[in-house]
Image (cartoon, rainbow, N blue to C red):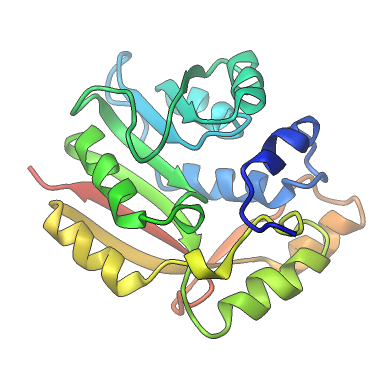
Length: 231
């Protein structure tokens, strides 16, 4: 099996909006990201959603009042995103076809562990953000436990990632990421994330539509980053 194959996203396109499908955890993460995005300060405020897939951030972005611009390489996902009100742009997260300083918020969720140059993607986030703009990222850390937990175990449990979607060789060095953020004038802090075990059990039994992501001090498996671009 080839790991980290982008074609998987098109092959599983019919599951993007199934809360119990192959992308279930992406629904949980979308809700978690939204908790760290401030409401839009004006009617023309823009949120750029990198690797937006099928547009799972759309309901949250609409509620917060932003114009939602989604960028992705996958045509099937972009069609779904467009159906959910996203201004869909086909392009690479390594060279985003949008203007400098166009975004009040950039969301870069489940992206950094899928590219060979995560720092270059962070550079695109910084380029797109206005001074004072907000950044929300999440990714899998490069650690001894991340492979066994986020791949070997997670691919076998309900709600976990589709088999083969992650390549541990691409997991993110957190120290390098923070150092790059500082060079790029991004104030970024990292926190660990985990699904609520109680919610997972209730979700599996059909008693909940989704699962809340809980913060934790240790960021060695799944982590989120919250920050702003310095003036």
